Image 1 (cartoon, rainbow, N blue to C red):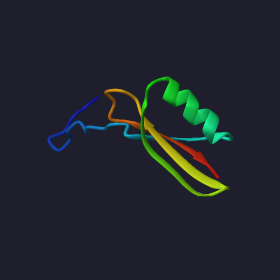
Image 2 (image 1 turned 90 degrees about the horizontal axis):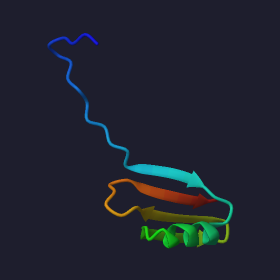
Image 3 (image 1 turned 135 degrees about the vertical axis):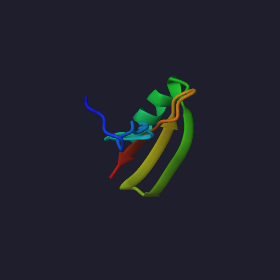
Length: 67
């Protein structure tokens, strides 16, 4: 890789991962069993729910969505 005066490495972090699931309660139970921290469990109605977990010591959240 050739560098010019202007090029600098860019710090990049993975902070959020979205995974669609068909059974939110089953997915929530699985991640709870891993002892991940539950940050969000939002349910708008019977067809829309968002659950967000964070692994211990991680800066990245895993968002489970049912729509």
